[in-house]
Length: 279
Ligand code: PDD
Image 1 (cartoon, rainbow, N blue to C red):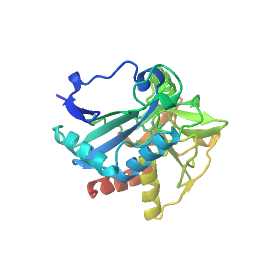
Image 2: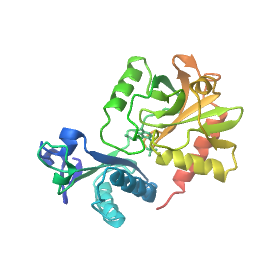
Image 3: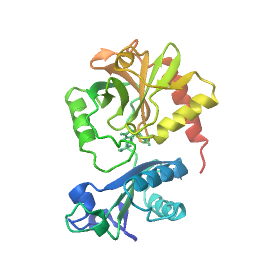
């Protein structure tokens, strides 16, 4: 039985319900976070809380809770799940109002959180990805619940036997439909800089931190579609998938078509960081 948190109460998932006039339902008016729990420890809690704060601010909402309040909600939810590797999903919407775009009508946000076991998929052998035009809006740095473009993009990838769509806007890579992107060329690692076209991924930032700490050659710089196609290695990163090598792009091998040596090194460093992590 999954226990969830909804507006101050803990209850079984089957008993949790919201009003159909919730603006999350009618407008997609809200933001979310996905936070991994490794060994029952909330991974990069402060970073996720900062991103939540930024997302809320960008949509003109106040954070309903302090970090310590969020922390104790998460701790309670984590206890209710048997396995130690979990992911917390939290969502804050602008709450229930009549269906009117005007946000000043909103008084009480709807606050929802749950923790679920992370579905362990072994993607270390590499995945297929496609490239696609970035069809999303221009506030991609907000972790908005309004995910229809990403849903469509992931479906298009699936239709072509791939797991992710790598997005290209005006000739440059932005990110994946639900991940950030790294490429390697001649032993150097590149990832697009953070701006309004990219979600500031917590995993991305950690990978960049690891690269800097280990004095590996990397650069946060624009990457053209052409450079992507000619990369020696491509990786995508996210909280639930961690670092995944892309070995086929648009049905063509990436580099040798095998998982690359830089991925092996960086993934090992990431796993070491994870195993030594305590909040
Ligand atoms: N998605 N970019 C987009 C568009 C994303 O949706 C995600 C994560 C990321 C990676 O961010 P992070 O490393 O903080 O997970 C980048 C989550 C996992 C989701 O929507 O389920």
